[in-house]
Image (cartoon, rainbow, N blue to C red; front, top):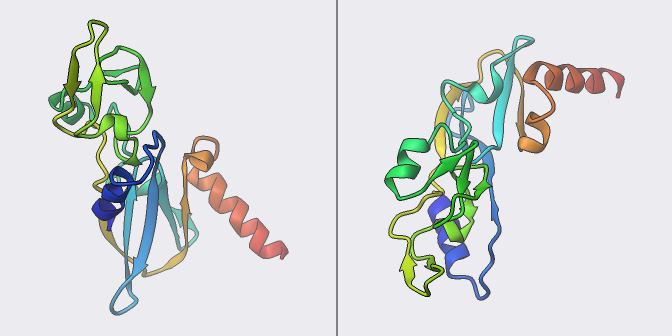
Length: 171
């Protein structure tokens, strides 16, 4: 579905420069496991027996940031500076995620014009929509939190879980 959604961005009626990240959890089969996935800097944490796992189960679901995906981005002809992907053909740091839906200026097929009027096309995606996915056990899981960087840039997993537990107790 991630590739289909990204394709829909590309085939939309009007060209849109925006993009988005995503995070999901799916309970499948016996209900004893979940499949977690993410594209971009949206993340998943889980609290087992009162102790939160590391943010985004970091060893399983990495945050898709340019610095951690630098080799792939540079192999596609991209440039990473100051933790951001530079706008194609420039040294201007622009995008802070290495995976996202949309952001069509960073996808294959995008056409650019240099200062001399020469046009060129991206041949490979500098930003891709391929998710990281992991299967996790629900044994002893109290809660699962899905959120974007709007939360994780300001709250640690421990602070987030403490806040949620406090709100559950007081409601």
